[in-house]
Length: 582
Image (cartoon, rainbow, N blue to C red):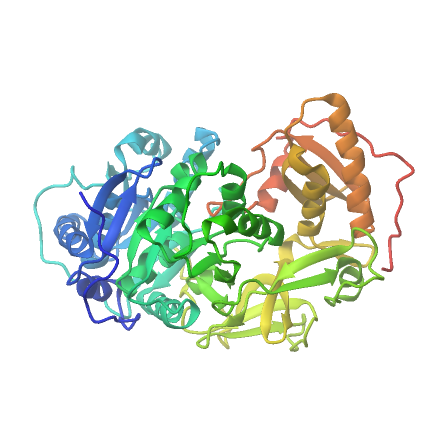
């Protein structure tokens, strides 16, 4: 068995399709396709786009014989040929797939079952298709609902088949559910039009995909960066993709790099933590990463320290820092919003966080910046030409360079609404078509810089404090002893508020832990001008979203419910810092 060729042999069409099925119909006439690998880099399956189309059409006829048009079908999004086939079968059958998450490697199965149950009710699913090893779990999760659990391969569907009518340009494409909450998941209702517009923009404007490109991905397919960025966009550009699963990546991250090296991959993407994990786990294996022309960063705040470590570690392996491409996106806009210029590497901006907290301006750091009150941001480039992006005040007045404000968008990639069974679609935009992203940022010479989420922003004595600043200081202060951190604000019974920092700690030595709390308390107060209650928790305790981002809302809710076994140590009374001014 050999992997699919890099070049399709076709005339290269760069995203000019109106539906997913139209894109697959064309890609299927060439030689490119999808390859699936195990954690040891052995090839599991090579699936040319021609085979994907043939299998999807066969399954589509059987699905259409059972389910009415526009029925919603939950698909457990494992990284496999079966998931890709089922997803495209729904497109050909006129059904609406809803990718579902996989159980977290270290999560409680009961929480996963609760999430699936709630999502199924919100989506009013007609069926769920799952891999064999998860069917019992899904059956338990849906025991109170009349929803059949079928094999993801479709093997237990009746063999009767009917003629199908694929989705048209004005039809839905899929529903993507948020992963930050188990109580009220939001279903983003993407359309063929929004998907086509964003894939076309990514292929032609954001990443300039060429016929000689080859993608390599470990990203989960239940998240927009994996599903759109590394299945749909490659499909719209006839690009071959080499996959390993997120679980395989977590176990052996160097396999991702090995596939890039052996298959001459040119286009990859990851949140910052993925690059960080590769640098930490590297043990000198022979690699050639010189083929990479685009190493994208997305899905969370761009971490300069993690990317610098990756560049330093893999420079001897031929990795060029100029390949790094920072970007900004969100599922409500299908995926991509802004991309840094290709071939330019990272553009960094050193900011005085003390002055940013008090003035709302991203003032450049200088010799006058107080110790601990400096943070490096990375610009995320200019918005795609098809997207209007504004940074505004609460009164929607446009802001100038370095003035921090709300980010709003308008354009053809925005999904049609939030879906909830029994209700009309909830519009994502206002009457003028503007989407409130919930993100904060500032302009820098025409490029957008993301500073954080507005709902996470902590207000303290007139200061705007970003939890990311607190978390960054904690991890740098704690070094290898701190694996992760989450900061948030809580209301006290006396009417006041308190800033809490939960830090995942490797050490079990009481003296080490007490010193860590003292050091982190002093460093975070020095950086923010506010007292921070530091509490150490176990490694892998902080809840994450499906894309690997910290869920601060989930962290806060679990903390208030007493879900962490913490033993806070009071910081010494001598630690002090001004509460106002910078």
